[in-house]
Length: 276
Image 1 (cartoon, one colour):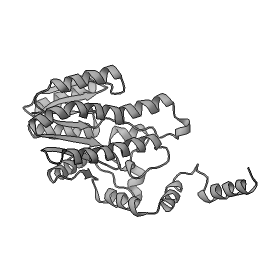
Image 2 (cartoon, helix red, strand yellow):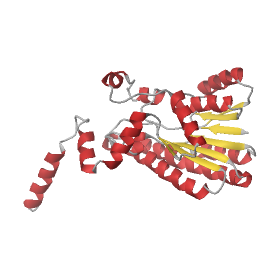
Image 3 (spheres, helix red, strand yellow):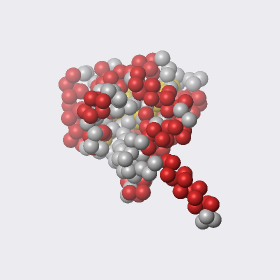
Image 4 (cartoon, one colour):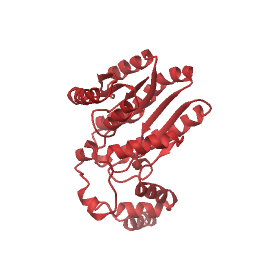
């Protein structure tokens, strides 16, 4: 059987690749950096008796995405699809280059949906398969400078839950993984290495291997939403029960550039009273 993993050149995607190889799956690994993919494939091949195929794919490119979609339809023994590829920006929406916004939507939303749509007929015919969509804690706990990221991750979480409902009478298992801060290249690109937050003890960073192990353990229990780590679960639950006004105030307090909410409200009321 085969497992296809997007964004497999490092981080959580690479950890999934190692774990599924350990379980005996042949691998199809995709990513944008061919040299990194080849390094991962070589290391895995040296450790495990599995076949590893690499595909250099830019999921935001329509031609590349179509090429990958056609490949998925060709695989008769594809049992696992992990939609892991993604990126953040760390920028206010007003400052975003809209081409980057469009690319994020394609990578986080359009690509997973197209790949799942291509994989599902084969899984349905065999009455078996695993689909893991990597969402984020940010899909439930939006922060400034993550508007499109949080929105797309929220979308993929809701979609995964719905897909679970549509496939729950079969042996197709769907999971949406919602990790918090994980020590990967993803956060280092945003200028965050976790050192300061670790010292504060406010947020606990996890390794990709820890996240993946929890994901697969949760999958074996048919848990659709997987939030790895106690502190991440606590933040997830807290964000869900806090009144939104209080949540907005707490989160805005973390962003020094934001105008306090009270000032905004008073300014709006004053403008209305003046008939503006």
